[in-house]
Image 1 (cartoon, helix red, strand yellow):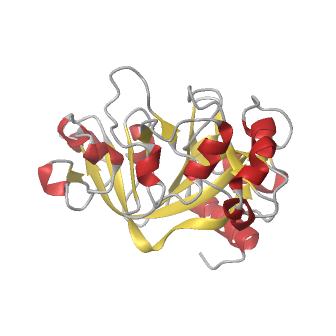
Image 2: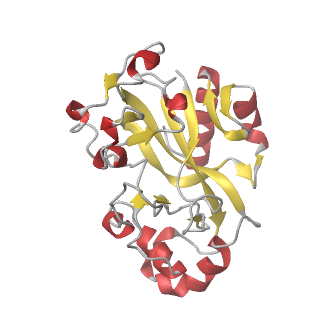
Length: 268
């Protein structure tokens, strides 16, 4: 069993026009804010407003920060069908097999609000609190936090990737026949299965989940001591200089699962 740890969601360094990070509340609950995609020629057609019911709180956060909920969004990964697709980082997913894990982390910032439920009861009450913190570039109280996991049940690759991918394990062709299985994924919705340049994973529902609380793994860009060995001794490969994006071996995967279990008090 192996795993991949990969960064998703908004990040102040690369998600213009939404220069922000995800809020974490005092009780550890959080709101995941998927990446915007307002670039010229972008293929995503879904707006934040259209995913409000799927990602509770995301529209309230955007509105209090003064962002339009009509911005286009790349909602991937998504935690209804448990799918995730990649182009640039597909080489990481290509190492996985059925039964392996993908762990998702995002850039986060602690906000002095008791809980997500408190915020959602009266978002306007906390407008200034969010504006003062989330729209700053880095600064104190930001960290990388794990927010979800997918246990892989199926992997789908574009036609150009099939032969190379099958050196590692079995996968299915990402074509029109895969549309029903992957219908909730953003890449399928925008037709990327026909380009041949993507890998999309499908997760088992039983062990694929969004965590009830964020699991911090860093203070700023510095890994916590509890996870240093996981990301350095047990990483078979990292995404360049990004220590937090890595392919972990079997022992590292088990160690990370145990760490998450301790932090969330859930049996994962």
